[in-house]
Each structure stands twice: as C-alpha cells, then as structure tokens.
Length: 441
Image (cartoon, rainbow, N blue to C red; front, top):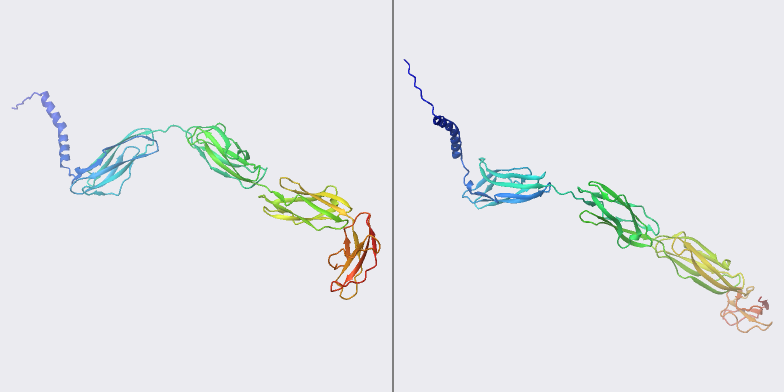
C-alpha cells in the first residue's frame, strides 16, 4: 500500500524559493569581490581634482586641464594602464608603468577637443598591473559650434615697384583678398591712402562682398609725377577682424635732369672772318635716369657766325657730364647774336644758351722772313700818315711769325705800317721794311 502525503503549497514558500534563486548569485558576486586581491597601498593614490569640467569648448579648438596624482602609502604603487572614455577626451600618457613612491606626485594633462556641438561626459581611469582600479576622474564638457564669421586674408602686405620713368605708368601688380571665414565678407571700401596716393591707382573685382571661401584680386599701378621715392597704401575696410587691412606701396620715379654751367656766352669783338678762342659749356645730368641728347642747333639772327663741338655723344648716365665748345667767326662787322638750342629727354627741353659777339675790321699784315742769321722776331710799327709811323711797336715782344693782325683799327681810317727784324740781343733792329698802307672800310 502506498501512502501519499499532500503538502499544501503556501505562497510564502513559493516566495522563499524565488528569493533563494535571486540572492544566491548576488552572494556569490559579493564573495568574489571580497576575495579579489588589492594592490598594496592602492587606497592611498588620489587624483585632484576628482572631476574636470571643461565648460564650453569651441568645436575643433581644444582645451587642456591638469590632474595631479598623489601617493601617500608606505610602499610604492605602479600604474600600468591609463584609459580615457568619452568622445573628444584624451590624455597625454607618460611612459608606463608609472611608479610612484610614497609622497610623490605627477601631473597628467587631459584635453577636450570636441568634434561636434553638445554635452559630453567621460572618465579618466588609472589601473594597477593586476587590473585593479586605482583612481578615477570624471570628465565633462560641452562642444560649442563657433558662430559664422568672415575672415580677411591678404596674399601680401607690400608691393614694391621698380624704377619707373616719370609720367609713365608701370605694369600692374596684384594681390589677393581671401575670405577664409564661414560668413560673407562685406567690403565697405577699397581706397588709396598714405603720403603719395595720387602716384598710384587700383582696380579690383571684389564688389561689395566676398563669399565664405571665396577671393578677389586688386591690381595696382604706379605713375610717378616726379623723380624720387614715393609711398602709399591700399586700405580695405570690411566686417572682418583687423579691419581695415592694408597693403603698403612703394616705387621710385626716375628722370634725367639737365643742368648747364651757363645760359649766356659773350665773345666781345672779333675781327671779321677770324675765329675766336673757344668758350666751353658743361652739361650735367643731375637726375637718376639717362639723359639722351637729341640735338644741338643754332638759331637766331646770326647762327652761321657760331659753331660748336661737343663730347656729349648719344646719352649721359645719371651724374655724368659733357662739354660743348662754342666758336665765334663773324662774317661782317657789327653786333652778332644767336642761340644754341639743346634738346634732350628731360623737363625743360629744349634749353637755350644766348650767344653774342661783334665783328670788327682788322688789318692783316704778312712779310717774308729775313735771311740774316740771329733774327729772333719782328716788330710792327703803325702810323696814320705816310712815313709817320710811331717809334713804339704795336707788339710788346718780338713776333715769332711772318704775319700780324691789327684788330685795333677804326672804320674809314687809313693806316701805314713798316716791319723791322730784331736781333738776338733783343735790341738791335734792321732798317724798316717798305711801307704798306691799308684803309679800313
């Protein structure tokens, strides 16, 4: 006979079974944690501050804060691993393992460099070689998208022009204005400023604005109105930081400058059909470019009575000079005048030199040389009546030639001349030659 016993189920009994099933794993976990080995002295490793809040950080800008690790245990502690969680957080990791003796501390640099806007949290964790957690620092920060702003970047801040002849325009030089920002660059003005803005000119294709990532160009030319070094600037006013932007300009105007030693030459009286001694002009280039002499010509009332010879050639370098020798040969008695015109590639061309002189009558004497030995020269005597020649010669010293020109004569007068030969003692003279008469027109 079989006996069956029925034990009524109680809801409390059922509850006990369920709790047992629930709590046994928990107890096992607690036992596991309780028996896990701990690093010697690890409870004396601390991190300060215990949390890092980076606040608002611009996306891709990056911000760095420091954490100090301190160890106060009796034995040294070894940090074998350092990890960072959270998007955008990183740590400058020292050489591992990192061993800290009692009382020693070390600083770690933690960086938050968000790649997008929004709040980010993370954790800096330090582990013992047994993978035990030694210390942890909570991390937080907010990525902030920067506002859209324009940016004005110039390809250069200086433009220098080479030597440029005065009153001529140089080739254009250009620079680029680039908007590297995220908003349109609004241009208020592009103007020339500085010491000599009138010597420069600019054109551009910038319009009133430059789109984000776009660019435009500005072209500048140089037209000097005078020789020398000149300066100005292109000023660009806009809505970007650092406005107005500026590009400095410089250039040198070059020109030849002609300077004459005199602008008048007076020859005085000169016997007709005889050539005067030369009078010399000096032409100097005091400029900073080559002076090209294009012509030298006589004009005025008596241009044929004057002549020139010069050393000017085709051109004179800056600072160089040349000479112009003028000769006067009157064709008739009386006042003579003319002008020498000098043309060149400089301001003031052509430049003129006034010339004056007077043609006068003269008496030209000629004789045959004496054959008597010891003659050192000749004396000429003059009178206004036949046989009435003066006892004082016209010449101050014996004439060592076989001719003499008497330029000190008056129009309409008749003069009578004789010549004697002078001996080597300078005193003894030969008898007078035959008498010659000449009437001045």
